[in-house]
Length: 220
Length: 220
DNA sequence: CCTACCGATCGGTAGG
DNA sequence: CCTACCGATCGGTAGG
Image (cartoon, rainbow over all chains, first blue to last red; front, top):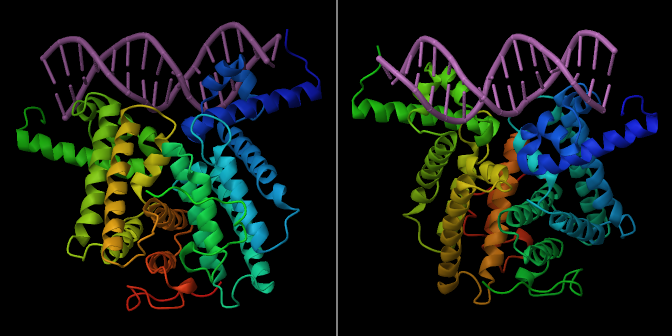
């Protein structure tokens, strides 16, 4: 009943497969993803699933590519309207943390978990992860430079150091979301990021660029 | 030639198995660890390997437990001599970052990667990971409180917020080590941690408790 | 897109 | 601690 589909139908099926693959891989990893369970979840045969990609590695690459595109739409694309520099940086990290809270099961950022999964496994998947991280890193450092040029950050700012620390806040938010689904994560991250982007501010006692939006997390 | 071993020999073999399991799991994950490859790596039969544990899950738990013990010996146990509070905190995070640089292949902190691997997989392994993180978190917050009581941090310090941010620095160090083996990671982490523990310091321009040990990373 | 099938490997057991 | 074996599942192919 289902052979001989049009090109449009084929593309739709491919999208369905990738969406299911993203859901499975977000709990079991891109390596723990299997063609058999994917087929069961989709009500298809294994051959019908793998026929769209050829090999499991190609399926993993397609799934990763979809995740990278989803991240770009969900995070950087939402802040194109923000003023370059400190404001855009604060907002893009806030969107990233918001993205971690989306969806169900494990929470957290899919790309972050795939990076951890493949850091010790050389191959095309690892290469694609590194390329995506390189793009993101270039984006962040260029916005930091814009903030320096706009006088929002000191001229002597160590750009790579600040990028390292901003990334750390996002990773802390990611881990706290995954492990504890802690609802205070977004405000904790906002607080930390606001202070990193307001260098004169002694330990967060003054206003940051986001002061009107943020609330102080409860004392522990 | 090898049945009928003494209890001491049995324990030695068990240790050998766990050491090999740690090596395999650090690249393929605790779920990617298989009894077959473990047996091949040890020159044993599969039955000889799994006989020490009964099930794969018990093997995973034993491997995780060994990693937790190794972490405790490598990180907190090394700073028992340090003065409680800011000094001990700075040193324990420095030891953690140093631990990430140890060994070979993927680098990074084994427990951090297992946490990411199992955050979406309910079961005994996930429970054990959460227990280990809970212990670590209690240790860090108690040292932060000691620093507040000693007047090294302001009385109004948000303890959980500071623990969140210190953890973020360690996670950034972990990811940079895994993905890039970046040699500037330890000094970047030291710099960030020193500043978190020196709240009056406007953006790292003054001395921190570690000023004599640390060097500024190169500008990016 | 399916049925039918392949060799390899999985976790694990029986029995010694 | 081994050999021998189990059913299940793995990634993937042949052929339609």
